[in-house]
Amino acid sequence: NTKTRDKVIRRELGVYEHELYSGRKLKRSVRNLYRLDFFEDIKVNTVKGSADDKMVLKIDITEKPTGTMSFGAGYSSQESVFGSVSVSQRNLFGRGQILNAEGQIGGRTSLYKLSFTEPWLFDIPLSMGVDLYNWETDYDTYDRKSFGGGVGFSYPVYDFVRASIKYNYDDADITNISENAATSIKDLEGTNITSSITTSIIYDSRNRAFNPSEGSKHIATLKYAGLGGNVAFTKALAETGWYMPLVLDTVGFLHGKAGYVTENSGGILPDYERFYLGGINSVRGYDWREIYVLDEDGNIIGGDKFVQFNAECIIPLLKKQGLVGVIFYDAGNVFNNDESVDLSTLRSSTGFGFRWYSPMGPIRLEYGYKLDVKEGEERGGRWEFSMGSVF
Image 1: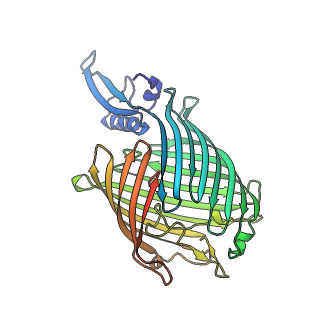
Image 2: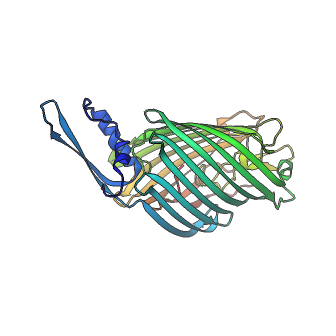
Image 3: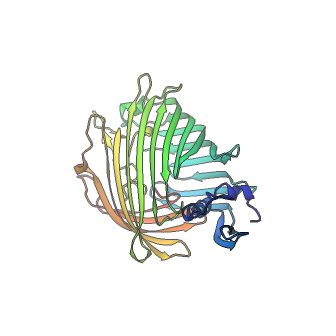
């Protein structure tokens, strides 16, 4: 290793000098190193030690570039025409720190964000992250301009399990509210301050962060807003995803997600914290935020709870280049607070697509076809394009 410091590598190893050899710990150590995404190749060799009951473990690594600068322009179903620029270093000065600056301008959204992560604060596996952002979004019935930031910490509490806590402050200005907006949206006009704490438990045993072929990831999150400001709510989210190797190097993926949000006394629950579905990361084939509920006056608002299911078969096309095909089935719906979750009312779709796990991150082109169309809705399907994470 010429760039990455020795301690960055050693702290990911679960095997230590003078202890009994463990194949399980060695396999886990190699997985940890690959998940850093600093190395092109990792080879483990054993050499006879100074006695018959001793061995020398040699780990040879091939480093790869960890700094990226990317420029992008294109079209997505959510943003129409968009442009983006990102500068990132995942291994800052060989210390394993992450520094990222990004900007995106689209038809609906403009986002500028700066973030820094120290994965081993005080040389213990306590991760600290700090971020600042300026975010503007044009929704169908109002515009939101927000500035904010946060600081968070996470710590491994068991094998594959991390606990995290984050404080976030958001100052949002709501303008250009349309006449046909719901009363609850009109009440948001002006400045809305959200001061919140979010806690999470994450289990992640995937063999790779990008394009995994086995393992699972599960997240339980609880967010409490009301530490000052006029916004006060409690939101709970649960998410699970399973990757299973199938025949001929194909991979099966099952994903589920559910959420519930309620307004706390003494504050408001803004529409942008409620739940909508539709789009490339939920129920494909439906437009962004096309799945919603109606208030007592028949106006569109977000739901207080939702469920979402996704099933995929991922097929390698050009394995070395990171190009895969995908066949999928999606289902989900949102519900009012006074409604029970009824799985028989889920909106569903099916389709196919292509993904390229590029140096800039996953690039997706996917077509979803609606399987159930309500009266007044547009029939058929839609192509969707995105650059960014997968679920």
